[in-house]
Length: 152
Image (cartoon, rainbow, N blue to C red):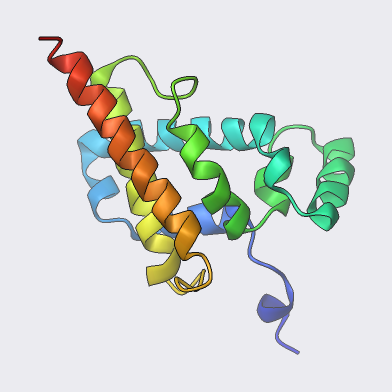
């Protein structure tokens, strides 16, 4: 039996694959900022994303937190949870006030939502509504950023 096929893909492994393959994020100016976004995303997922977990994931996260409290959601939950959680990561509470950092965060989220179906991690037809929700939040976040830059 293929062990890799038997073990569900975690958010942690999904993000590792995304950051390893993303050409845009390899640019030296983007690398540091984008990895800062990754750390912040992992913290966000750990603090705010329990509502997106399945019942079995909640049990696993609770058990994982007994061993290592930080990063339990990222280690246990799957990429679908990541997709459902992404709109909140672009909300006012989590979007940086500094425009350059906010742009990077928006860009990373936009790239992740494109990566998930393109890499074959999620079936675009099955998660189309969630993808549209993230894409709509990306547009809203960009509009908020543009309005803040041009207060006239």
